[in-house]
Each structure stands twice: as structure tokens, then as C-alpha cells.
Amino acid sequence: MSDTSAPPPAGPWAGPPPSPRPSPLEQVMAGWPAVRDRLMAFAARLRLPLKMAGLAILALMYALPLAPIEGVAGERARLLDQTRHEITSSWGGPQTLTGPLLLIPHDSARGKDEAVLLPDRLEIEAALAPQVRYRGMFEAVVYTLDATLRGRFRTPPGGAGMPFNLRWQDLKLRLSAGDLRGIRLDTVLVDGKAVIFEPAAQGENTIDAVVGAIDPARLAEGVPFEIRLRLNGSERIGFAPAGTQTEVKLAAPWPDPGFYGRFRPVEQRIGDTQFDAHWQVSILSRGFGAIATSADESRPKLLRRLVESAFGVQLVQPVTPYRGVDRMLKYGLLTIGCTFALYLAFEIAGRAAVHPIQYVLCGAAMALFPLLLLSAGEHIGFTPAYAVAAAVVVIQTSLYTWRATRRPVFAAVFGGAIGALFAYLYLLLQAESWSLLGGSLALFAILSALMYATRNIGRRVDG
Image (cartoon, rainbow, N blue to C red; front, top):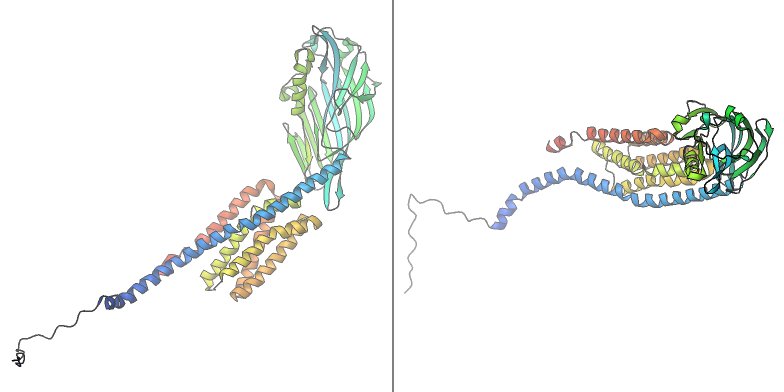
């Protein structure tokens, strides 16, 4: 028998029926708008840092195409060195005049030996006539040196340091240089008498002249000498401080001398087309004596120290195309980084959307600049090539920026900034001694500008 009784009626104090409990899915969906807002705010915070990190990685990746360009520049530079060697091999190589020296044979316990006496005073007046020789598109600097060497030989007072048993009747005069193939002797006088140089048996770049007999008393007073010569050479000219007092005066129509060696000129004048230099070196500053002998092995040490003390001038070509491109490659990442920084600034300041492909192509144009500079510099020279390559890249990237941002103002700002950067880098390439300081200041200025431009980024996102 079934129960057909109805449920008891609700009393007057009964509450409303309980609402159904939401399912877990409904709970998640109800909280999704808040989660979504938080995710979007977090993504907005990370968008700029992630984009900057991606651009930094992209800029570093451009080191890969810059490396082959550096290899091409190095290969062309080696070809230039080879061509220069071929040009100078038939003219004359780098020169270092050593001497004249007085050779005095003497008897010793082991047999026959030879002493060398350096001049008491040596004065050199020299003039360079440089010229540039070309082979194809490569060039080499050669010169002709006209020099007059005057001075005197004098034995030390009381014969101090002189070996015994000297044979004063067999004296010789010796002169050496780096390459004597292009030498011509006009006058060689020793104590007023003409002598003749002949190749020495001890070296291909050394010549000796038989002086004959000189009275020791005369040599103690001082024996004068004078040598007038013309010598072909290339790239640099040096002089050994052979005299107890050495004085060298050198002049040349060359605007960029590079002085080298232990001793700097006491006077120098460098003009737009000419330089003059004056050296004075004493026995105290050179640090070794004036006489040595083969009997006690002091002679080779003295001659070695004499050559090591040489000083002179190098005919510098400040920036060759290959040297300039090699140095420009060191600033390659700087130009690419500045390009990316400008595009990023346009996005932040002007709300211009720049596609990643546009970043890539504009950076590629900057990476191509050193190759344009190298290929054009071989034919028209570094400075014209730099101007042409910079103008082409600035025009190309400015027009591309105009189309990418659709803002003529941004294109003008980009072209002006990149043009100013190229001009600044050219000044750094020309001023070799200031390049490190200038490059450091440029990086500091760029970093400061980026810090200033991004100073309110966090506050903008929060607002």
C-alpha cells in the first residue's frame, strides 16, 4: 500500500530554499576577467623589456656578417703589403744609417782582433724627397734621402779603454744601412783625404773604406770626416746615435710624420705639407761607451746596442682604406645599436609600430656600410669613399624609415641622427690618439639618452 501523504506545509518561520552551489568550472569562469586583467597588465609590463632584450640579441647577431667583412679587409690588406714589398724591393727598403765607425786592428793574446771607435761628434743634415708609387689600385711610399754626415774621431784622453798593440797603419771606415742597393756616395773625406767605400766582407748592407795610417797623436786631437750621400728607401728613415754627441736635422715635404725610437726630437715643426725635426743625443743618454773590441766580445754588444738605440721618422699614411675599414668594423655594433634605439624611441614616443623585419633590414643596411666603404675606398680613397657610403646609407635608411613609420618627422630625425653619428665616427678614425676616448664618450652619451628617454616607462604602465 503506497504512501500518498503530501509533505507537511511550510511553517510561518521556514526560510527560502537553499540556492544551488556553483560548480568549479563556474567559479573559474567567474574569476577569469580579473585574472585576464592581471595577465594583460603583467604582459604590458614585460612587453618593452622583452622587446629590448630581443633587439639586443638581434644586434649581437650582426657580429656574424661583420666577421666575413673583417676577413675580406684583412685579405686585401695583406695583398697591399705584398704589393708594397714588390714595389720597394726594386727601390729600397726601410733605412737606418749606422756610422761611420772607425775600425782599428790590433794584436791580442788570441791573435788578431779589431777594435771599433765611435765618433766623438756626429752631425747629420738630411732632407727627404718622398713620393707615392702606384701599382694598380695599390700604393707605396718611397723616398730619396740626401744627407751630409760630418764629425770627428778622437781617442779618449790618455787612451782610456783603448786596447794595446794597435796597428794604426791599417785603419778602416765603416758605414751601414738597412738596404744599400740604392746608395750613391758623392763625397767621402777623412782628415781631408778622399777615400773609397767598397762592400764589406761581413755583411751585404755594410761598406768599408780603407783609410790607411793615421798618427795616434793626430787622432788624439781629433780627425774630421765628411760624407755626402744619396740613399733610396721606403716607409721610414732612422739614425743610430753613434757620436758621443749626436745631432740630426731632418726635413721633408710630408704632413704626417711618425717619430719613433728611444729619443724624441728636441724641436719639431709640423705643417700642412712639411715637417722639420731636430734631435740631440749625448753619450750619457744613449747609455754605452765609444770603444769596444772583439778580443773581449764587447764589440758585438756595442754594435747591437747602437742599432737598438736608433731613432727616426716614419712616413705615416694616417688612414688607409683597409686600416680605416678595420677600425670602422669595431664601431659596427654601435651603429646598429643606435639604429635600433632610434626605432624603439619612435615606438615609445610616437606610438609608431615598427615591424621586426624592418628592424632587421635597417640593421642590415648599417652592417653593409663597412663593405661599401672597403670596395669604394680601394678606387677613390678613404675620405671620398666614406662620404659616398655614408650618404647612400643615410638616404636609403631614411626613406625606409619614412615608409615604415609613415612619419616624415621621424625620417628626418633618423637621417640627421645617423648622419651625425657617421660624421662623429669619421672624426674618431682620423684622430687616432683620441679614438678610444671619443668612442667611450659616444657610448656614454647614447646610454644617457636612453636612460632619459625611458625614465617614465614604469609609471606610464602603472597609470
